[in-house]
Image (cartoon, rainbow, N blue to C red; front, top):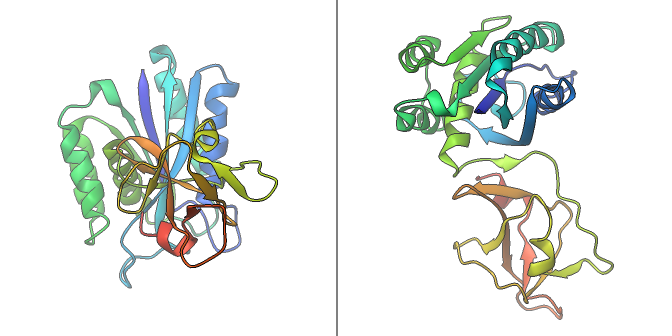
Length: 247
């Protein structure tokens, strides 16, 4: 059974980040033999003076293939984990969705997209979760993290939002490499330019400081920009952070 798990607002300025807690929770699925977890994506939500957040107002989501017999055990574990591991002063929220049981998939996706544009409330989040029959729970503080947790699942399920947590390590002696070799990496499905064109396997990419992929069309995509006006063997260069922050 495929599930989506998202947590939000688990940290404070001095604590471990929400991404680190998501990684630990995902690892517990594998470690306990409940199933196999997948990569974690970071989903940017609305930044607004009326929305409290630690640094960027983003939630962290991952999917997993889990044995249905272990579903309730995992939910219990995840709730206990957030109560124990979330930082003092945080407002943690947890959302867990069994994809195969979810009807009206487009509704949760729409909620996630709205959370990027407008201020939403806990009541709206709980009402939607109840109507869809999905798990949504708060584990401290004001509980406002339930909004971002539900939104993060919707955005991940859309397949068109989020950046892969952490940078991609690609070995290259001179910081240049062919597209075909990049796509051999387990966390790179395609290389595209920022206009959406797929870059052919034989073209050469210059790797920047932080190589990160984004989720587009359900694929992990490495975005690149043209190398212009410079003497270089590369046709393209990986996009810098300020470009990736828009995804």
